[in-house]
Image 1 (cartoon, rainbow, N blue to C red):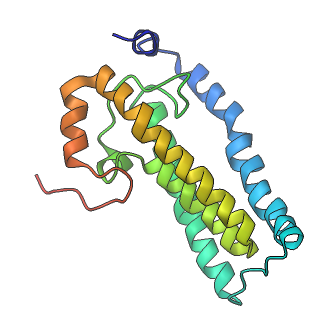
Image 2 (image 1 turned 90 degrees about the vertical axis):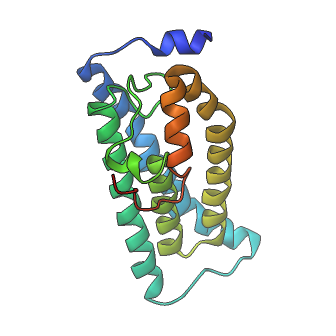
Image 3 (image 1 turned 135 degrees about the vertical axis):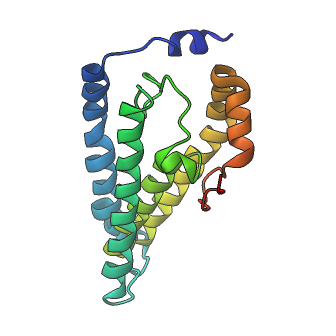
Length: 179
């Protein structure tokens, strides 16, 4: 058993889990969207990139991605805080393997939600550089999930996780199988 696996077994109070999640919130709900929406267009101008303009479709498509993404992300976080008795952050991982709620459609619904929301912001802002930033961060996050987190989950939850992994897709959802 790895040092992280032993450490991850420590359960924290609900108040502490919520507090830690709220402390991380400004980064994910404030700073990163700001970088995409405000810094992205400035980078576009500096790099001589033309804005991504599809007229009012920018706002419609971007808005739909944003709402869908943040909804999925928040649903995932609430599920992790309540049913999983943990947080989305590795410092306070869930105590139970989550296979219900959004986790029955894909193994990483919070990641999918985050990517969709930030892409929505990039599309609304019409920024090519901001959208490229989102895609590069998404690629890095997906590599982290595949290389590190999946192994850690297999160590912590054993056969239950491996069975879940065989049944539920990594990132692109599909309807759950009927039982």
